[in-house]
Length: 115
Image (cartoon, rainbow, N blue to C red; front, side):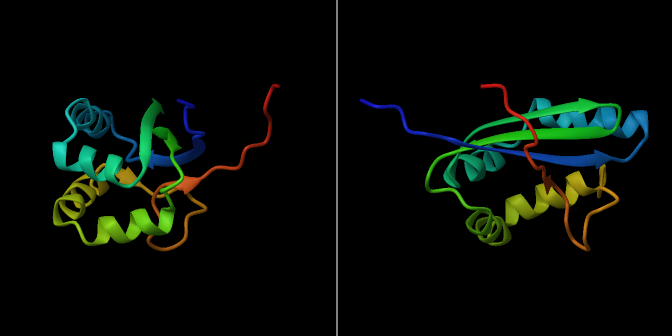
């Protein structure tokens, strides 16, 4: 059986620049709520990786053909547990300087790829 092709998206976000806050955020991500993990996989996301340096976060999503940001946003808006998680995480997060009102994770542009 042929392995499905996955699309990759890279996103960035900042954390509040406070060592205790950053430590708390990392602790939550060592034990993500099962309802959040299910909401991620139900949306067509196959893998998620989040990296951190200082207060900058970098997230890599690998998604299948069923995924779209619009669909994921609608699913999240209708899921009370996701809304609870997002409200909690926003205590530790801060928008990038270029973010528009209400934006959190910003999609990054690929500028190079070694072939």
